[in-house]
Length: 505
Image 1 (cartoon, rainbow, N blue to C red):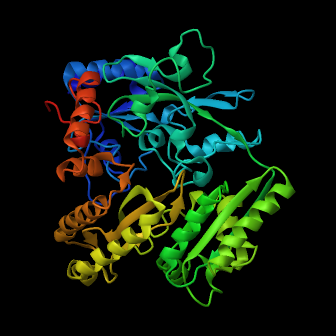
Image 2 (cartoon, helix red, strand yellow):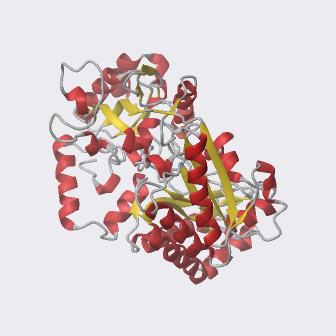
Image 3 (spheres, helix red, strand yellow):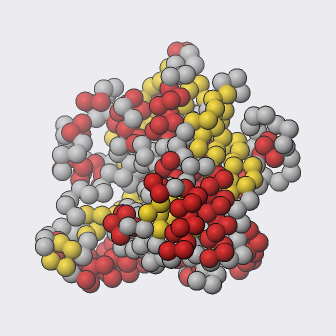
């Protein structure tokens, strides 16, 4: 291992390589509660050329390489599976390279966060459309492209962040460096279009969860931020899940291009109010579910017409407006104007001391999400005995359900479902059974949701392997994905183990 360390040190210098036990353990966690994997070496490369050299050495040594953006993923996606490998920390690659204001395209290094990128764009009256995931204050754009991320603002209007992708610079597992889209033509000076010059190879690296290549440079469409906006929040009547689904479908049927539309279930309203996290809702007499919309327009006249249509949908479905100000409970205004989209999304994480997430993020059609949520409730009741075992230690019961239901492109929504539980270490004592029970419950719930036909997008270590283990992929699809992996990465070094692509360890 010392020979390998010295080879890598020559590439990135002493300052940006470490095999220190404390550093390595610092890279052994994401936000998940049960997955572990301590790397052998951690590197912070500065550019695609350094990554290329690192990957060539990794192939010679047959050692796994794990790209890590900001480490915000929920399924062990940016750390080793087991104790081995090289972690490529992309944080040094966080620079904006070019803003093409004429063609409305920004090019940046893949390690930059959505927060930093949009802070820069706001000085030009621009934004990225989809603002990335709910963790976008720190989540990297490279990791988000790898996941088809949604969750920040703008998903109803712009869809997942990969929808605005123009071109990629990618280092393949072999160390070769390629560019996609318009940049496949070596005579193109600036990226301007994703499609053409042959097949859409960028799509191969969208949602790949880091198995096909290391993204180093990303070009995205950007958009002028409209001058006029309205944000409204409404309390839902009974049968709130079914009513919210009906409202979201009607928005789509009428072709209203909302910027955001989101359903917040009664569980979120009740617990966040109870724990003092959302004082804007203290005045609500009934802690029922909420739904909100945000609509943008270029003129006042256009805005008024759109608001009229949306308010009619809300009125016809017997919702009650909460008022225009944030203090009235109007979370839509806070979400849009105060960057609440990066503060509220994972709203039950850590609500009680030592509570951690075992959640998952997926897409479903609007019309089936109430059925999925109802079945998650049923799953929770079926596992009451297991939940009670954890309650007896922690004094609080794990919370099962979903975060906000977010309208994305088409007639689809994003669901963040799962449960929050506790560590095995609690109140000065270790209770080993909790880790094993959490893992068993997590697998059980995700398998249940998978069988509703959900489309998982942030998969990482855990979900990618679970899909294979439970036979969710068709044999033909999985074999094609495996053959592509073998062609690009014959030694299976990159993100080794995801989707059960192990190679020779």
